[in-house]
Length: 222
View 1 (cartoon, rainbow, N blue to C red):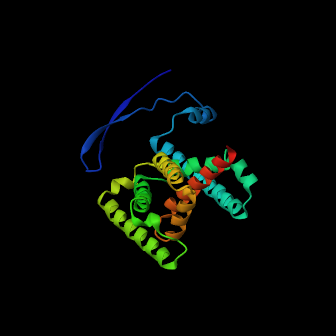
View 2: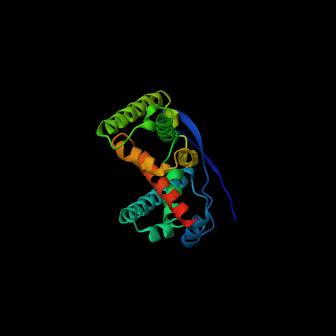
View 3: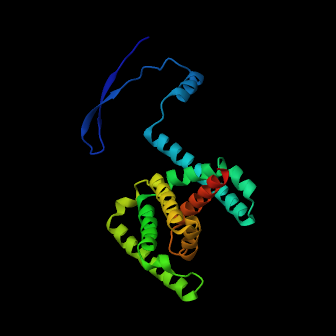
């Protein structure tokens, strides 16, 4: 096969003469062969990134749909169905949310909420009294706002994945709470979610919900 290369002098974008290389050698393949070869060529970085983003979006959407179904089942107290979800859709939703959504800033806010409860007079209040409920909410709201101000100073926390750390943190809190109080720590976390729903982000609310539901389902299956 002949192979020829030409050199052409032509003005560039600054209107200065520049030598350009022109290779008119045919590829040696027809249109159909070129189409087949294109399917096997490696994708560009931009194409790979776009494909990865699309796959992540699909997984997130499916996780949200699964979570909605799980929450409906929880509301109906359908324990048998919940047990079946523990190793299927529930775990899939859990893994997706922790992998793609939870960042270090979410972890910091939730950990500080749990610490604010554990190491303050909040752990001794009676929730049946309305004044105590307001005190509990206001105290945790102030803590959330304080941590958010810290995060603004360290914006890199919003990019660092922290799903596994959050899961272990909730699990450890529940174990410690159950051991020290004899009651269910997951119920307390549910109360924290409900009281501070307007202060927590969508990711924080969703992550806490799916983690507590997963841990309940896992306990039922034991």
